[in-house]
Length: 246
Image (cartoon, rainbow, N blue to C red):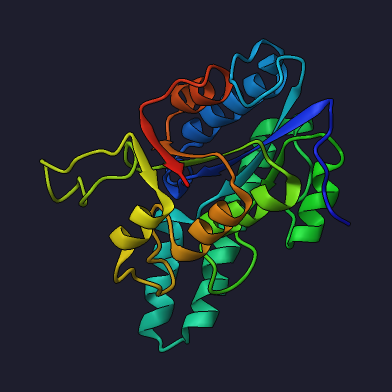
């Protein structure tokens, strides 16, 4: 069953950095749950040019695995586990993170974590906030998010990361790195160059995500994973970050 865009609901896919789930007390998760609930409730006041003012926004969220996933993957790799199996470990951790966010959202969320694209479609049809983790080995949560955005006919894909957007070099290593306000999918591919495809090694965007974004012309922005920034880019079309263009 293919998803269609409803006249009453506009879907926005949000990939959340695994860092959101790395705290000790769940306070960060609560902040993001509150933000998602606000988007879900207040979208009738949206001024975003790509979202109808009368449309209700339905967030479809993909939780990253983050530091916890990398921790488990690192230990399992030291035991000699193959990369496909390591990917599965990362997926399971991201699904546990998704369950935490579902718990924080309460009744606004679809109660279970979808495990494939068909289940994503079924969950989205309920109109509730959907929270997913990874889906398939060999696929980053960035690629998963892009595929979900394509599948559900999302009006926007927001990739919320640990940095402000896409730079010409790693800003954590180069203080003079330049932030792109806009970047084409081709420029992104050139920047990726020798990307690390090992389990737990994905960052920002990857080739699969870019191909999906490009073929379906999904409006995409990469921003820092902060609740107010995500809220502003979705409801007010305002954010400091990087728009991916075609």
